Amino acid sequence: MKNSVRFKFMLGLSIIFIVAAVVLNILIRQVFQNNLENSIKSSMKDTMKNSREYIKYNMFTKDLYMGEEVLYEKLWRILNSYVLTYNYEMEIRTPSGKIKENTISSDFTELTNRGTEEALKGKAVINLQYGKDNVQAILSYPLYDGDKCLGILNISKSFGEAYVENKRIIDIITLIELFIFMFVFIASYLFASRIIKPIITLTKQIKKIEEGDYEINLNIKNNDEIGILLKEFINMKEKIRNQIETISMEKDKILKLEKGRREFFSNVTHELKTPLTAISGYAQILSDKNVKDEEFKIRAIHRIYLESERLHKLVINLINASKGIDFQEEHKESIEMKTLLNDVCIDMASKADKYSIHIVANLEQGFIFGQENKIRQLIINLLDNAIKYSFSEENINVNAFKDNDNYKLEILNKGNPIPEKIYDSIFEPFVKGINSIEGGSNGLGLYICSEIVKQHNGEIHIENGNIIKVVIKIPSFSPSGNNLETT
Image: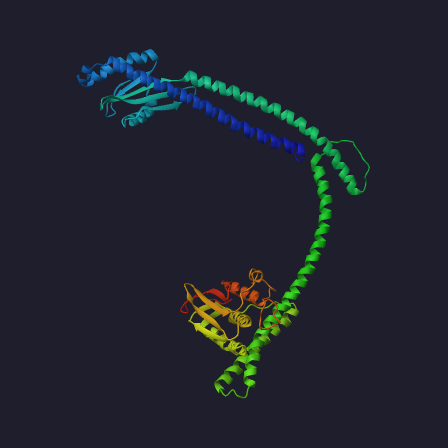
């Protein structure tokens, strides 16, 4: 029965009612206690008012100058008759807090001391102390003659009868709450049973439908009610859902494989294009018989060799990928950015010259920690992009400098503003610009640049307008540091 819906329903309902009853009972008790305390305090305030009036009309001016002992004796006689009349207990203390006369039980010494401390500050306070069947109230207030404090008066009274009556009323309310709870519990149980009965029939019909039997059977049996319904319905639903998920998963696999294949070969094409650009540029220059600068020829041949090696590595990675071998991550190392930027600017200057575009570099020294080939590819891609979309006879400005804890790179070129639709998704794959002086772009250049910057924990953004400004920030470090690691 513990797994039946009826049991769970009644258990939950019982917990709710018990919690509600306890909370309500606590609130009622608090309200009655507050009312009792307010009534006691109101009574004690009246006592203070009446006692002051009583002293006023029974104490003469000459009594104030007859000495301390005579004064307190006179006060005691006056108040004692008042106290006896109203069944109070009393204590008189000097302005220093010394007890002169007292009929209050020693059980309440702590309360009288506490009240005296407040009265010495010029306050009138009422302190309460609860017992088993009693609540004791102690009123403490100072007696003044003008600005002169004559003493402290503590008046105590028991409110046992009011306390017992208050407790009796609360007990009656608690008993009424218990009877209400039992009535609601029984009514809820019968109501729940009536609701669950037709659900049992529905459960059996769903089970037969699942088995292919559509005959209607209205026999009702109390047999784990909604639990059976849910179990059988879930079984049916799960079978359908599993089939749909299987089909959907197979479809997603095919789509992902196709998308991955396209992106992989697009990336490889772009990767191969980068070193070929440099090789082609230097080869064209070297083929010119008018080039007499031997130092440039040596450097060009060395650069062609390096880019050929880089191209060779890309081809090897492509072959390994086709065999299912993962690309190995390159070692990270310290990169001196000024030298690297200067080399790339010189390499790309040959391509820029073909379109009467000049690369102007303003570079400061700085170091980052990363993969040199990736950073080189990043700069080549950005300069190549700037050349494609620049106006002829204009400059491409390359600025690089330290910016707090970052090394900042800015590439500026003058051209047509980037259309808003393209600009909003500029770093997404397969987003191609327009008005390029070259064709054949596959829209992966800036996407690859963005990924490289992310791999180096940097930031990249583009400022649009008549002057396009690409800004890159990559964390820098001091080359004197000893905390470099390779991965």
